[in-house]
Length: 311
Figure 1 (tube, rainbow, N blue to C red):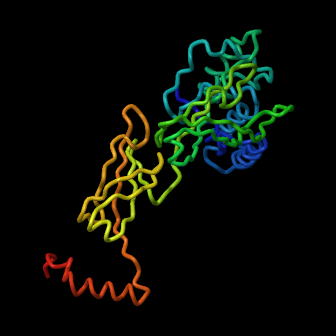
Figure 2: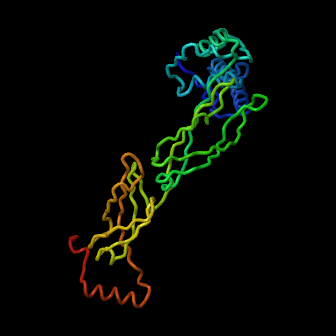
Figure 3: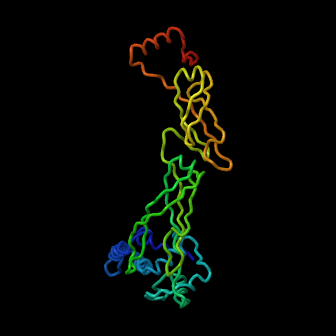
């Protein structure tokens, strides 16, 4: 049996409000109604639109459809879970269950639910939700507490879908990586008929920072050094996501030299490494004394970095 994407048929998002669904249905009904439409397949299209509207305009049918159809796309082979209909009671009823008015998908799905409903009432687990959370790199080193505001569709007192805001407190664990998901049990969409809520999955992203590049648990940090620090070598203090560290710059270092600090990357088992990428920064020649020093260097060092480039 092929899965039917009722949202696609009506041309609305899965988060569409009841009002948006109603407007989409009316627009398509005007286009495909057999009495006025000149479309060659108007009757067939109208049946599809009516069927999609019957499900999505009813809060209980829509909730059941969303629950069993997670992850499916239109045209994919679909098989409902065994005995899924036993916990449903569609109080809104059904317009007509004959095969001519509905597709095999609808008849097999909701027809079974209609025939097999129980007095236990409709109950279904809420859908899982997915969102992103952006954190500082330092949060991955130390862990952090965050507050996230979500907009979720909920049914109001009249059963209509409305968007409501709610805040969720999040504990970012130490050692979390970019792309990793934080699961918050029971923080997804609310269940129906007393069913449990779904879960919320937050995909971790790091805030952009020109100083850092992250690869899994390894961190690359650009560190500016003076020409004399690069040429003569010596100790310098570098601020890092885990705190300041003292490192030794080898003599005769050039821009791009990489210093590895083992275990100083994002914590984990094992922890990543921190790589310091040296960048030689020249002081500006904006004073007479600075220009004199550069003139003396040009004369005394006689250094030509392009000597081996050839013509």
